[in-house]
Every structure is written in structure tokens, then in C-alpha cells.
Image (tube, rainbow, N blue to C red; front, side):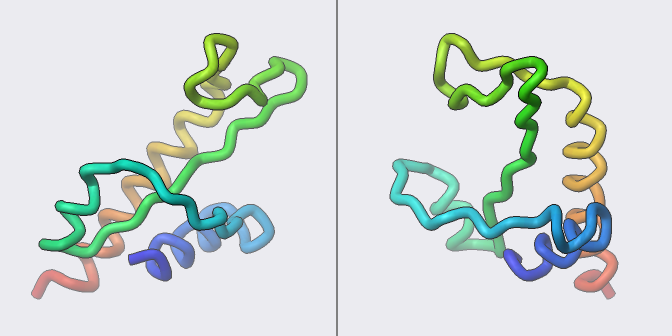
Length: 89
């Protein structure tokens, strides 16, 4: 699933805009879902130095750059649609 999402991201945004995130240990219930079906995590970058949106997710100073939301929505939809197109007979 990672390779599928990476290819879709590269197709939509270009290879130079797709980065492999370092592996981290986290407590996450999502692992139970991925025991039953393919899954992966991906993040939509939104660092905007003008808005100072470079604070971590759980910081009280976190600011969402809403300009990236359509890109994230399009990426999520493209990952799902292209996966289903190639796995549904």
C-alpha cells in the first residue's frame, strides 16, 4: 500500500514533492485494521513560513494552512480510486 500511495503522490505532485517519513513507534489502533486489509500512513505537508505553520500537530500554537486541504483531499481520493480500479474485478 505504501508503494501504491507513493506512486499516486508522485503522479499528482511530482517525485520531488514525495518524501519518505522516518519510521517511528507510536501507539495507534490503526494497526488492527491493517491486519485485515492493506494500509499505510501518509502525511500532507503544509509548512508555510509566512503563516508560521511549522509547529507540531499537538502544539497549542499549531496553525492549519487551509490552502493544502484540496491537495490532501485530491490525494486521498486518488489513492482510493486508483486502488479500487486495480483491485475490483
